[in-house]
Length: 221
Ligand SMILES: Nc1ccn([C@@H]2O[C@H](COP(=O)(O)OP(=O)(O)OP(=O)(O)O)[C@@H](O)[C@H]2O)c(=O)n1
Ligand SMILES: C[C@](O)(CO)[C@H](O)COP(=O)(O)O
Image 1 (spheres, helix red, strand yellow):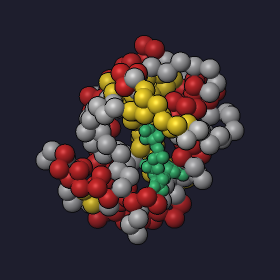
Image 2: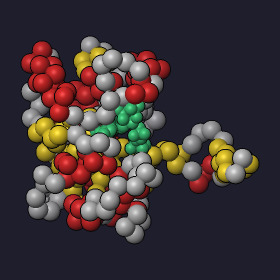
Image 3: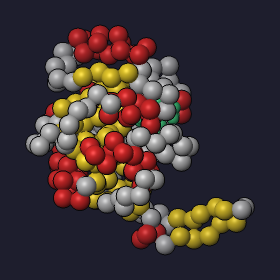
C-alpha cells in the first residue's frame, strides 16, 4: 500500500499578524513547519511527504532547509488561493491508489502515534479524522438567539484527516464552496460519512500569538 502526507503550508497567517507567516516562526529554535514534517518523518507509516507552499515562500523554505540542515525528504507543491486549492494541487500530483493524510503545517504537536492511528483507521473505514470532545459547554447562535448544545455530541476537529485516494479524488473534483473549512467537509459533501478517531489536546493549531506561546510550553524536548 502507498501512503502520502499532504502538509498544507500555503497560507499567509493573517490572524497571527506577524510579518513572517506563522509556519516559518521559530518554536524551540526550529521553524514550526520543520516540527510538523518531523512528526511524519518519525511515523511508522513513513508516508511520502508533499509540502504545499506558496510560490513566493519556496526560496525562503530552501534557505531555511540549508540553515537548519533539514534533510527529511519531501516534494514541494505550489499553494492555491484557499486551503482547498492547496490540497487539490497536491492531490493532482499523486497517481494510483493508496491513503493520504492531510495535515495543517501549523499543527506541529501531532504525535507519530496519532498519525499512524489515523492511517490505520482510514485503511479499515475509508476515512478517519482526528477530533476531541469539547470540555467547555457549547452554545449555538442562530437568528440572534443562543441555545445550548449537548457537548457530548460536539467534536472539535483537528488534522490529520486521512482518506483513501479514491474518495479524496472524487471529493476534490467539486468546485470550492465557502463552507469547506476542512477536508472532512469536502468529502462529506459528496455523500460519505466521516469517522472520528480520538485526537490529542496538545495538537493545537497555531492561529493566534498565544497559540505559539502554548506550543512552546507543550513541546517536549
Ligand atoms: N491558501 C491556503 C490557506 C491555508 N493553507 C494552510 O492551511 C493550514 C490551516 O489554515 P490557517 O490556520 O487558516 O492558516 P492561514 O490561512 O495561514 O491563517 P489565516 O486564516 O489567519 O490567514 C495552514 O497550515 C495554512 O498554511 C494553505 O495551505 N493554503
Ligand atoms: C482543518 C482545520 O484545522 C480543522 O480544525 C481547520 O478547519 C482549519 O481552519 P482555518 O480557518 O483554515 O484555520
